[in-house]
Structure formats: structure tokens, C-alpha cells
Length: 190
Picture 1 (cartoon, rainbow, N blue to C red):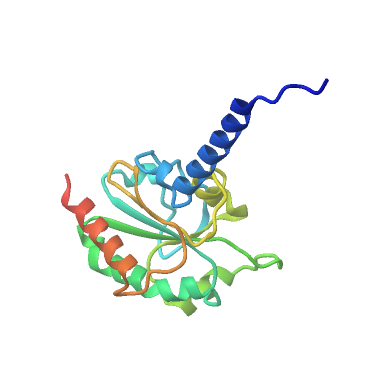
Picture 2: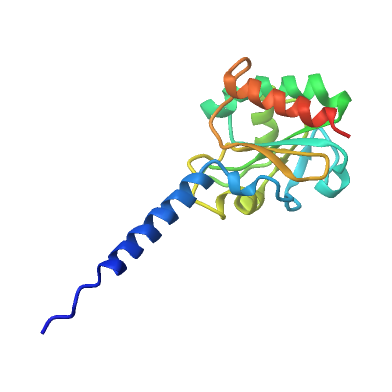
């Protein structure tokens, strides 16, 4: 005699599947990370600045953007907005940082990051994220993501306040305006 069907097991499996899908969809934009304290970054080879540590920047609002090259349309489109944020808000306490993550199969050559940054016109502090250590820890390991060109906005206590999950935010775009409003809000708080 065949085993008896138990419809409630099917319903539980469906509910569990849909629940997992809903949690993944909710985290696609990194919402689960909001309000958490960002871990210390593991970056090296700083440009435009001596080495910076997250712990030393408490009291500052921090915008971290991962970028890769001028050939990346998202990086090229966002570079002017990052420079604008840096120039407009640095005196008020915003620190804009660019973390380079190497995507080429060729080994990273000395001077490559500086040349890429110069081509994009980046004027704020930049570091290299070797092996994508910090990118994985902050963004890629908690969930599967569509982009690696992510931006994190941290409040003055080092907590993740806003995430732009990748792609671009050209000057004047809706995403740029949203990020600018978030920066201004955080800068106005004690």
C-alpha cells in the first residue's frame, strides 16, 4: 500500500520556499544590513591620502564606493557624482572613499589603479581591495548580488545607513538626489 499523502507537508514546503524567496528579495538591496555596524575594511595601497581606518573616522559620515575601471559604464557615470560629494561636503564631515576591486584576469600591475583613477578623474582617497576581501565581507557573502559597484553610506557611528546596491548614480539622477539627501541628513545630526 503506498504511503498516505500529507497535504500539510506540501503546504509547509511551499510556505518555506516562498518565505526564503521573500527574504532574499528583501535583502537584494541590502536592507538587512541597514543599521548594522560596518566591519573594518581590509584595503591597501592608498592614493590621495595616507592609510585610513574606519575606526579612526568615527564622527564622520563615510561614503564608500567600489569601482573597477573607466571601461565600467557604472563607474564612469558615477565618478562625477562622487567627486561632487567629496568637494561639496568634505568640509562638513563627509569622507568619500573609492575601493578598487580588480576584475581583470591579468595580474594587477603597479600603477594600474592610479592610472585608472586618473582617467576617471577621481580626486578623493582611494585604496585597493585585494581579493575583494572587504567587498565580500560587506556585500557579497551575505547574499547573492547583481552588482559589485555598490556604495555604502555610513553614519557618524560607523553604522550602515544607506546602500546603493550598484549600477550608477549620475549627477542629477534620482539615485544621486536620494544619496545627496541622505548625506545632508546625516551631516546635520550630532
